[in-house]
Image (cartoon, rainbow, N blue to C red; front, side, top):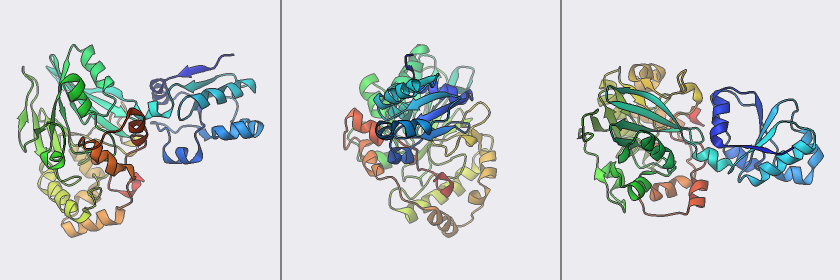
Length: 381
Ligand SMILES: [Fe+2]
């Protein structure tokens, strides 16, 4: 029997459709401990490293429960195929392995239409491997994107399906946890980068500084996009209000918790900025505005359609303990109590996102793999 294969996209579909299967991850303990496949429902998953199948085949096979479809994932495709063949030789009937390997899962973007108006459509690109979200706004023959990941093909495909060209790419801040796709969108598709000057002043590429209260428009009609400075998670953090209805808030407003202000090594100073943003801006915004976060911690934050979008009213209720804090010292005490180390790649990713350092595709994939660590609360651990 031949080993069947599946793609990262197929895996996402199975997880969303709650298919009953066993996920066998054959990466080593360290890789598995660092980053696992996650989905909206609990996953029946076992980790038996590939090397164990080579050294102790019988014992390793015995660790894989029988009776279910088995889907095997590994780092780079080859070992998952090898293990799948072993399982078939031991009588497992429905076994398949993931093409490309775990990096395909890490780079997967799953787009979904989340709203719109008479002349525009807004799409969320969920990135299940990073627990992050980026956005695409279509109007006529133009598309604007917000906080794109480096897998720009998925944005380009949506634009193409709609006969549109990507004209602008907005950055909410200089990301530390993933490599931005904005530079590639500029180089390959000629998109204009709009980004906060404070975060990007060291950048080696040209960009348009996102001015506070500056309004951006499509060339013909469509919704207005208003930049609003919301410093704290980073000193330049900027949110983009679309059509007065949706706010792309980067890591400033999250559905659970609030974006960490301690990632730049200036926790006290940035915490003060974030407290000011919270009290003078977020708490004063229209509570019916729908916040579109840059990250999530858990799939429980998604709605029934698996979309990460929530009204500011509800977000303030969910995070009442944070939004009720009345002074900056108490706010800093909360931040300090939740501080934890950040992954060591973050410093380098920040440099890559300003064009100060370049890495090849393979290293970019390795650095970019793994769940974000951007929420302030410990539950993000
Ligand atoms: Fe961030």
